[in-house]
Length: 133
Image (cartoon, rainbow, N blue to C red):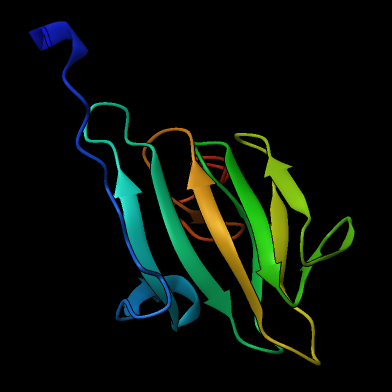
């Protein structure tokens, strides 16, 4: 076998036994639970397994990256509707949005970004869309 034909090394995470880490969202005082699955240092793209607990909503915000949410369990509640397990929801870069779990149940999902992640809440002085005085 030539070097060009060498099998790639796989990244494997058993998400059933992996420890959940906290993903702090300081502006709203939340610590979201997540399992890091993969990140690409060259592009900033990342994939996380996350959970929104029942009743949690990530209020109006924007991201400098596009991201997708693949619902594994529960229902994702957004400003545009509710999406049950098996749904894939793509959030374009730059627009404002809100999303979270329903009041009744947790929502577990895969969170996928296309480049480095950041979050800016509407009304936060760090929001690049905030008016300057």
